[in-house]
Length: 194
Image (cartoon, rainbow, N blue to C red; front, side, top):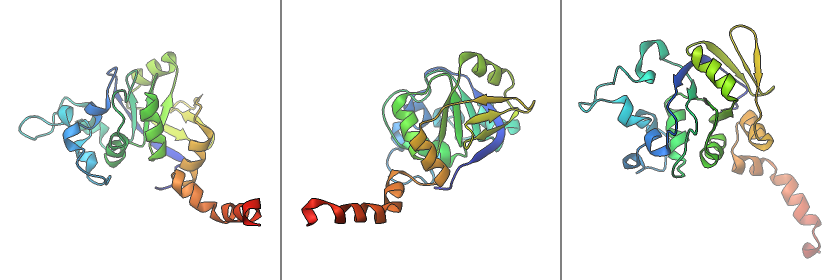
């Protein structure tokens, strides 16, 4: 996982409430334990027509949203069953940040552990972001703020441990491995080793 300090992109709006993990990545594509290639199945039933061609009506398929990596999603994004494949698919599809008024807890935890920044904002801020969908945003993870084209900044809160891991580009296991010398020194000092 690459360290994430700043994400700069145009935003793309998908203002549908209650997008669940099966809509993000349908269960029929959960046959792999690797992340690579899952992006082509992200929002599969909305992105592709029955003949396999791109659905021109779907926001992520529109030419003006090509390369956008900041998704402004509807309320209660990522609800439904727990599956790491959902954030894996979004990251593999190029989405690096999801912003919503509510993000399901399990999805948010999975996202933050897998390099997808998940930000919850107020209804007022969300409406403003939707109103100006397509604007250039910068997600400044170091200072926990969304920087807008007009120069204004919107603060957000993120779990401090998840933030540290994202900034370092490590998952929880990577964080522990980096502390192996301290762990071994602690174990050496323990009474059971005496």
